[in-house]
Image 1: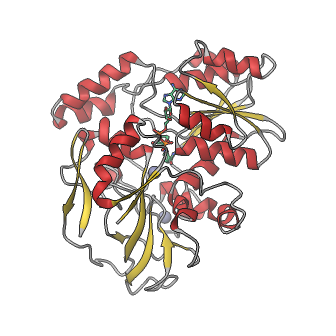
Image 2: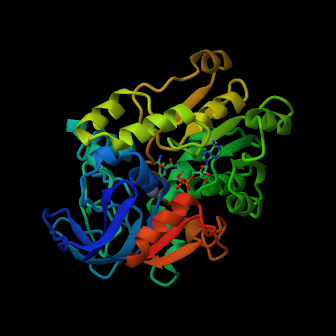
Length: 393
Ligand SMILES: NC(=O)c1ccc[n+]([C@@H]2O[C@H](COP(=O)([O-])OP(=O)(O)OC[C@H]3O[C@@H](n4cnc5c(N)ncnc54)[C@H](O)[C@@H]3O)[C@@H](O)[C@H]2O)c1
Ligand SMILES: [Zn+2]
Ligand SMILES: [Zn+2]
């Protein structure tokens, strides 16, 4: 089959690789019809190279048609249309029992000290072959795949794999009081959907980014926006919009590659050119994240408010403003999304023909799998108006 494989910094290629096959009775094979590129893939493309093997298949936002199932997979059958959550969880361990699916004890990557395995996401997360491919082997398929109805276009459902549950969790973790205000840093796909979900739940939303088409997209979905590219002091501008006090909650939907952190950008660039054997331990012990958005989130939130971190961070010794966080009494929540936990909240919204979250207005590019390298490039460089890129294998 064809698949998108990683070969080095900003070097991904579509190549012929062996077809996946059932190995365990709990596996399924799914023929993919749509598979997306995520902001998390951009971290692999640019800074997390030391943790990826040459030839690894990337991708973790797929949907398709079940081709084959193992003997223990009974809730889906060949021909069913399914979306596959990005984290691989068993559904029956202690953590899954608490709906902490991103910490599944059956798939935890213990030799790396990490949580549940993820599709297409580095040695840290199990080096499971990813989903930017024609076919996907789905481990723990007795639990993971989510059945969706035949009929509506893939775009209505594909975001159940990551974007929607991640954004839903970001908003829930932000703990916005009734009628309250939330600021969303970063208006990529995750920030867009976090903002729309917060609007749907009745909150006032202020969105911050420096990319014009992303600001425009947020604006047309009822978000007040701040253009970070022309605002000197973003936290101060947010305070001005909220009676001088700051918003009740802030969502950081930017993560480790924030603009405006020159020292950490240098560290990321340096670790990017060192050999893996030196760079990986360095990245695992040092503070290498670009923290501009996170620091501004702490600065902007009102006293006693909550910061919900949904953007991915990876440094082990990042400096944090402890005096400010402690004195303001900030609550912090974060982590990988527990995808299946939020499906029951989201399914009624994506199957509603009136499209309350406007999922049909997120993808800007639909490309054949062959053009995935181009998709990565325009998504990373924010060229050609790219906000979300979907691939059709
Ligand atoms: N927690 C999870 O389970 C989970 C799941 C999916 C994605 N993520 C993470 O969420 C983050 C966003 O993903 P995405 O797909 O929306 O990616 P993206 O790269 O398209 O979005 C990031 C946005 O942040 C903006 N930005 C950069 N620096 C900024 C700053 N200083 N202030 C304000 N905005 C700034 C960029 O212009 C961009 O629009 C990534 O870190 C991704 O890894 C986490
Ligand atoms: Zn993703
Ligand atoms: Zn489990």
